[in-house]
Picture: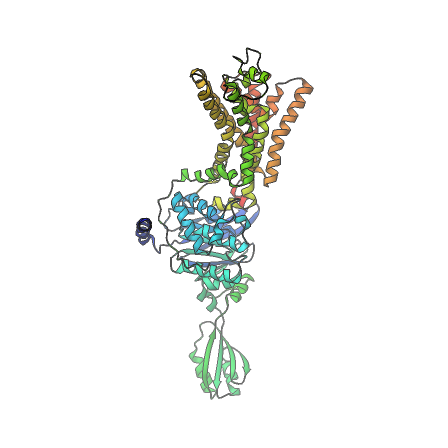
Length: 337
Length: 302
């Protein structure tokens, strides 16, 4: 009888949740900065930055001190830009920091926790401070702590947690009020490989399945490749490259692996007319073609040399190559800088 | 993060911005009771209350122990006129209830409580980077400081305001008739108001000192120096210059008592009311100025 009553109450409670969910599901928010400059005293952390964070997961890449954290803090209203404007779609131009924060979940880079609080108390209190009524905050705190994988540990003081577990609690705190935008500052710091994999999977799920806009600030390129649809590369407070990962890795001189049949010494000479060539031994070659080159010309010159193309495999650049190229002053073709 | 639970959207009606600081204040007020040491400390701070409850019971004949001479003196009617120990031990006099919060023995306990709770409130959050978590939520730094102050005031007020009130209620029910209620109700209300105001000022100074400090231990040292050091300097100056009123100008705890006595209309000697207000006002302004500098978002989070 009692169990039936409890089940009924839970079902009744969920009715409201699902009703509201259909209205808000998959809504996300675009965040844009227009000519933003941030200074700390004499030091310029961000210089005349114009960038838009669309929906989905966007990697904010840069070396230490590139200005990534300053951008996130400015967007949260923690740091006031010296010049420029910031805009969240769906919010008025003159939205107060408090209005903005209600829609944003922030996971700070630094180790941060509430003294003398358990994991559950920390997440629930931060939910209440974000505007959740006590009962909702408590229920939601349990949900998100389960989600990030904290079961019984949630009742232990956060001060005694490992670094990785504190990262999980910080993520749960960022999610507790169900924000539309997530700012994650180095979220995989201190996580073991399994924890990192789970964290990335969850972030990917949040952006792809639940329509959250995720700004993923990191210097770990593999994390961005695993989670993000697009990336913004920063160096010394400026954007040096931005675009979708496909755009970023496809641009510039394109590298191809070619196999021909039969092996023919004339082939290399023929290919040199199209771009740089390196013989890999036997009938294998690596060919660097300029951006926009027509691949049909490859088939034509190989045929003219008396052979046939057996395989032609384009090699995409890694994000690491793009990043290193961008931060060392190179132009990343195919990306907007 | 291997949980089988899926993410769900949350549906709730947001609490207005002006009320979001309250859960933090409530947490601050109950923080002490989360550990055995905290409970022990609070129990220690209740000693003046318990002692006066025993005195009350002896006066009204509920308890009958101790030397006959002392018992007879306490029960003399009225104590002050009959050569008893003084109005501070006479439940029919408001000074009996005020003394519990403002007399020198109470200083030790209030200092202990404010040092461990109020003075550490913000400094401890700074040490664990909790400020970054709080300020990226729906509360402003001003609301955060307000919450810390309110929580500390509630806790310290339970010793300096609620305990005298409870003692007074006990006295009313132990008294043989309702004359105690009739004679002291008005004065007690003013006294409780005075105690609440003075407690609020004292905890505000403590909270702001905490906001200005770099570490929790540094905050405790600074707060203890202000309270104990101020008192020591005041005693020295008063003795050397032979101006006892200087205590009100320099010692925060003496100023606290002078302000309470002044508002509640209780008699006091060698006190400067202006000096007491100036002492508390100057400390408040100085600590606010220091905390404002240290609690700017750019500086606290950069």
